[in-house]
Length: 194
Length: 254
Ligand SMILES: [Zn+2]
Image 1 (cartoon, rainbow over the protein chains, first blue to last red):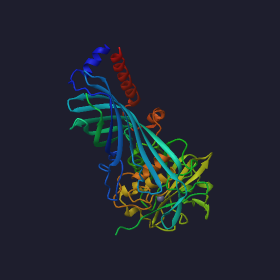
Image 2 (image 1 turned 90 degrees about the horizontal axis):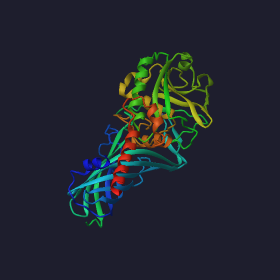
Image 3 (image 1 turned 135 degrees about the horizontal axis):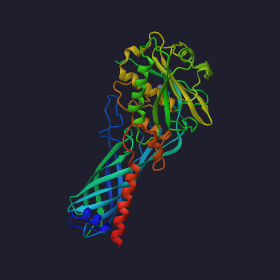
Image 4 (image 1 turned 30 degrees about the vertical axis):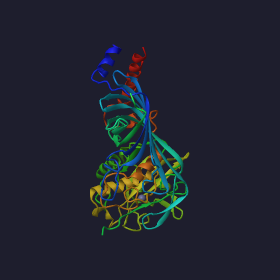
């Protein structure tokens, strides 16, 4: 039974094996697409990417059938969300199964997205209607954790260079909080020779 | 130029004002929070309790319940008939500078939205609403009161339905522990903007800071409070994927 499952999964794939290697990528990451207003005209964040640095290991577990595993860690540059006194940063760790088909690598897996939010305390003077008020700022670091389903596709336009696009799916169980982030970028594969 | 419409936030000594909550005391302990509506009619702003209920539903659904990285989930409760006239007429502070919360309109639990016609609360018609977390104990918000300005000549009759929903969503932001944001794209900016459709990045950061999503361990309680429909298959799905990965690996090794 187990071998039948494996056969079904791997049968359509051509042989184009690579050895185990490491890759590093630069990606544009658009978080929670369509969930965030980005200006006072009502524009939503369908394209408001932040810079992501992605690192990944390619473990070839079945060279004949081009089946691989991909531990990945990606992180964004710390950002301010418009308020210079508070900062946030996104880190994603994932583990995906991959299939190579000629110049293409498809992946699907699971992961965890961390959103780190921090500030150094103190107060910020802000308009409060008919007067200005000192509002307290957060003090310390809080981190949210979201389970994600991650998927991606790579096109190796050169042997060591690939264009990548993909996404993360969040909160499938919730009709309100269900969301999609997407990314696209370029990866360099170190020592990916067959 | 668009008329500047102003929100207002009161805070007691216990409840600091903040841009993001810096104080663990100033959040609800349970991120599943009920929003109730006072049963008094809003005589001067043509907002009856049923209309207000529907608008509050839209406010929680279209704004705060949308944040993927936060466990905050607001649910509509009931139109209450307890002390309706007291909530409609009394001042929110029994004395000012600093505000001492009026015990007569202390909210026992969750969030209560009420119209109010006391001119002490609303010295200017530009003030659309005010919110006070007027029941804090054990380090947490237990109850918060949001009063809509129903004094004669208030500005609600000049607002579109979408704008009133945005005002309600803004004040609910205060009720759950957020202060103002300096950025215009944030719902917690101090005034209405020309077109409001969603929370801004600063709102997401603020509510995530206060009520972070904590998966995988929080996923079961999260699913149980989400009444928005949809099958709760995410966790079994993850387990299934992990199992398939494991089986494939074992096959390969053997
Ligand atoms: Zn406000």
